[in-house]
Image (cartoon, rainbow, N blue to C red; front, side):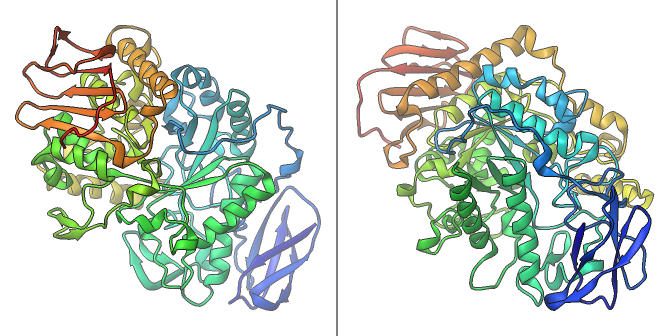
Length: 570
């Protein structure tokens, strides 16, 4: 068996296989390579030090600090499902956390609920990060082995079975990956080489080294990991966490290099592959084509649309909702027709001007639209979700928008279970630091310490696990039927998928609380207010809540269809 590892500062490197160490030979560029016995578990020792896991390990059966285990990707038997991938435009995404989607908290458990997603009508399942982290429970954003799969979820074999099952049912799979930092515990990369640099600082400390000495190999390491998910696990696309935190001063940005590599792989694999960026920049460069000076990602998240929706549905104006909450319907109209609210405007939350105009010609499908996400729920003090009635109204705008719709697990039936911040750190000092940090964060907003759930408490993750008895009856079942109807309408009528922002027309009455969106022959009227509003003329297509002759009840919505008109005010 041939082994290799990049460790440019080491004076000696050995591979340890099943307890036996074998020296490796130094090669140019800081690489160490050599032959050793074929075995089950292995690791690398530098300069006579302890055995560390392989930075490119595909499996960590005993966790991030244990030995690595070899994985033969070619040995997995994929089904002949006829899946050849599908492009992102026109799709509906479903964000899912494996550990709390079902009580089992595994890929196998999630696989048992795929029929629910097929019946719902979504096109892609977007998994939160699945790389290994210490302990069993966590959101996944503290992963420390970017090539491996969290063992408690089912390891590499479990992920492949899940992807294979999803493809058999006509569902694509997107994986959330984190390139901007590694978790605070179990990260052994600094022992091997300059994977991080003090040249730049991020919210997590020293930045991942994308532009300092040694960054060629670091970039290759991260791009290799991304391509492995797409190739070895047959993932269809990647969601890139917080790309604004990828600090890179080189002429060719890391995202551009990654996007180019992914498109080359797509050609070789003969199936569509895509990248979605989570960006706080409101910068069209993220999705502009590489040939036009952009980074070449296929889509990016749009928190502005979320913030406008949330402010309209809840009336909240604290924090980053302040600019949106002053006139939430005007904010909604702006995002629905221009893509972003902050496109060079003053942001009171940031204390500066923010963003630049979104090029409407590039298409609204390049922006993801959503009423809830793991962040927007879980980063609230108690992880509370929107109510059934609030979701009925916001979903109506999400699924008839020019954006690529996404929903968060359980949203489709108005899950009563919260989704809270939970961890399972094995280091007691780190666990306490996280606990106290969470309490300090929300104390600034008036929350008492005992009101903020303890991230380390097992009850926190249990509370956050979906209750699958809910969608069977009552208002939960009614909302689920409404989501299915909205997704079906979007699929059946091209006007409701049309990504042309310039073709979207919006009327609103801020004082009344009603907003009406014109999408071709369709009128989508949403009354967020407490008083009856006006029902648009036309043939009734769908409705939620009260309606009568020309009347739309409080906190109700309706979709009608009539002749195509132009010139509606906005």
